[in-house]
Image (cartoon, rainbow, N blue to C red; front, side, top):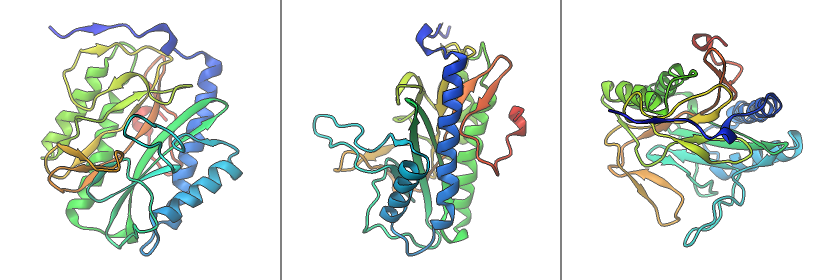
Length: 275
């Protein structure tokens, strides 16, 4: 029998907090929209980071959450405002002057914006130059659909396990691997809060979802095996078998009847979630 448990009360947001989460989420989505025309062959990932920094700080009058984040014994703080993960990089890729984008690369940009103390966290894939291999294109589409499959399960009374089970079932049916070591998370005034949102697992297990909870769903999907490796910089995560990897992420709100995507982008069709 799978075990379920109730969420701590502090994870349930008030209407005022939810409104602040909506604003932070909208700003994060705007960054991913803004950067799109700048992503082209010959551009470095550091250039993209610089553009995002200027936009968040000067245009949005917000705080980039990743800058200076995550110092730990043996690991320096992250020194950039976005993560730029190219091809076989799974997540937390560090922007660099030396990393020049090429036509056919697949790039994930992950951004978190703080506004009025609340976080909006989102990421998406870009195909550099507009064309890539059939495999890479399919991998990106499967990663996005995997996120949507997880979002579809979100409503009061569902569980965190329902999310992971739906994602795992879909990804493995496409003969890809879903990463185990990194996961979604609760979010609000805290960047990474409870619950951990695993992208695999058993239905009807884990924390029970309630109206007012906010968290991310962000499956990482590998073209080969699900295993990953952490590089010596203590941030960059790559696929162990050097296969390609893709990821999509949204910040979500559990509503009375289902779910609201707080980081929705203008061109995104979210009609299946009633948005």
